[in-house]
Length: 343
Image (tube, rainbow, N blue to C red):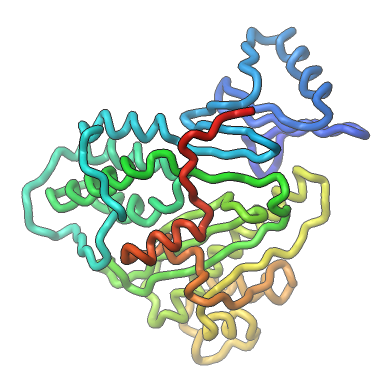
């Protein structure tokens, strides 16, 4: 049965079994329990289609998968090396952070135009790397704004990101078998940082247990009049994503939908989300952003405060100083997976 919430996932359930099939064109990932149901499904598919069984998942669409002791790790080391080779940067010097804080990039900057085809190609490659690298999300999103007429300063910034990738190509995410099964998220924004229009940047990251499963960085569609409003807009985006995630998990596991907690580091914004009154501080905010109030009132989600020191979405909203960046990279769950092997 095709999932109504994610068309790339199919499920088959029995009295004592469940089967999941992830599909991308003609590449399939099959999992479930018990194992005999997986084997049965494979045999049925082979009767209809010409198929090759590649065994335990180790590589899928550029993502390297390691399974050990019930834990699953993912990274894109080979793909990162491919990007560096195509960019002619395999021998380049590594850098500790992707971008210096305070770097100012604009569309109207003076300078020589660079090859836009090459620039767009590098952006496309880096975007695909985001499947396992939330630490790159802000930088790739920012540099994507200049694809139409890239200049030397934009290409220089991309090359610095690639030098960072070179030094961290083996970084990835591990999903622990005993890491918990609850979804929770972090929502943060930067207020008018590095945008000519004065628009904020939205950063959202969700966790299943201890490990990240969904993240995004996006320039806000409207100019906020305060950091409180910017956080309010971001939390609304997080609310919509949380509803989809909890419903998808419920459908896949045939369990009840559970309320998801979203952690925000702005107490004024939290008060605005929890206050159903339409008062002066929020009456100018576009009506669609008040959706989060309805979610809180219906008890679909709960919003809680988190100290800025532990706001995991911070790394998705701006270029951070070295110590802060390295701390946040570890905090969000990225680690060096060099040398990991399958059982």
